[in-house]
Image 1 (spheres, rainbow, N blue to C red):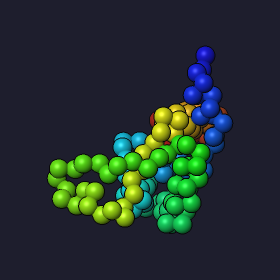
Image 2 (cartoon, rainbow, N blue to C red):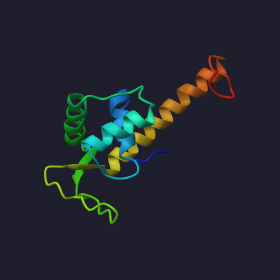
Image 3 (cartoon, one colour):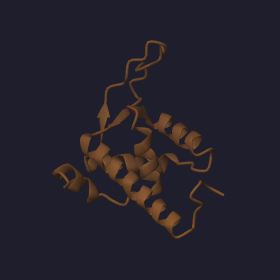
Image 4 (cartoon, rainbow, N blue to C red):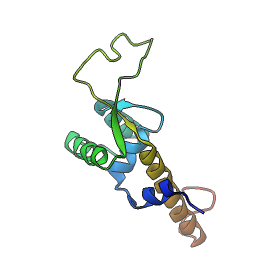
Length: 127
């Protein structure tokens, strides 16, 4: 049985790769645009590079859909610049956004599982 939030989340699927990466960058907490770009590139070992136009178009769309929201800059005692630039905007996942991210990860996991059952992928991993 699924709850209403899960059902609402599924109406946003599937996500594009760029949106999935953007939302995944916010899974551990708020981030600003440049931080999102850096994390996506680092996480993918440079294979995924989002342009600023792609990022901010996606941010606007996700905000309009209620999946992310503007949040206060996180306090970072080790960073004297944290929150110091008033032009820097931070974004965080909403409850619906987190549910969408979770459902997309489950959807992708099911696809990979199916590919393994079809012997497209090695059961032990890439190779």
